[in-house]
Image (cartoon, rainbow, N blue to C red):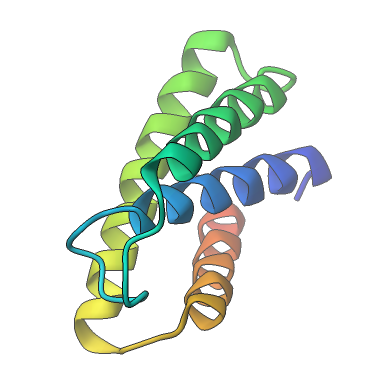
Length: 107
């Protein structure tokens, strides 16, 4: 696996988790995180991840890949938390494991 690809996916996972933690429906934190902080983190991570992927893929493909990965990350968080109650650090590590599996499968 390319280190730039891994950094791109790690950045995108961090931003996606931050955006999820700002939701009123999340069950990881007692109170949702501040949207003023988390959504700019998500946007910046999305842009950085897209930019890093542009070294390997075309701009359109990298943006579409980032969008599909964000959807996959959010779905995986919801499905994981529906079965297992995790803390933020454990959820982050679980997401990294899913990220590694996805990248090794060729996504």
